[in-house]
Length: 124
Image (cartoon, rainbow, N blue to C red; front, side, top):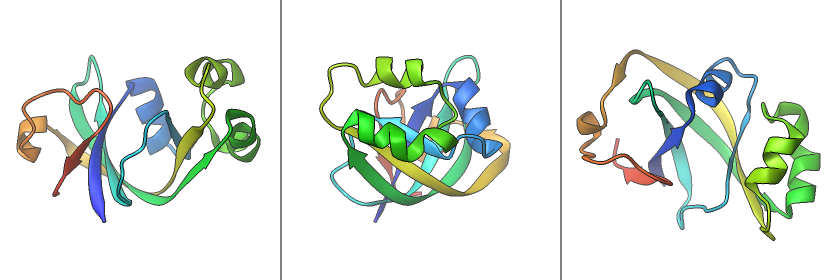
């Protein structure tokens, strides 16, 4: 299993940490099973703020995925629909235990010298 760093808007990063968003949606998935997601909170924070356990990856049509995840999505139906507009398959990570870092970390601490656009693997 691998770990990844995901860039996530600070609004949604906070919802994940507060456990009001238990799914992280994506249009693309890594080709290997993921054990942990490191949350890179995008501007204005620009730091890795937490490590989150991945319980499972689920993939369905957008309508089916929304039915399954809507109560713990942390987002609106309108946002969900816009995000997956034109997609036949929608993916979500079901999130588990969260470890918030007392001191947020720089990408360089993970050997990353660029801001990930989708995700990037890490050995941490």
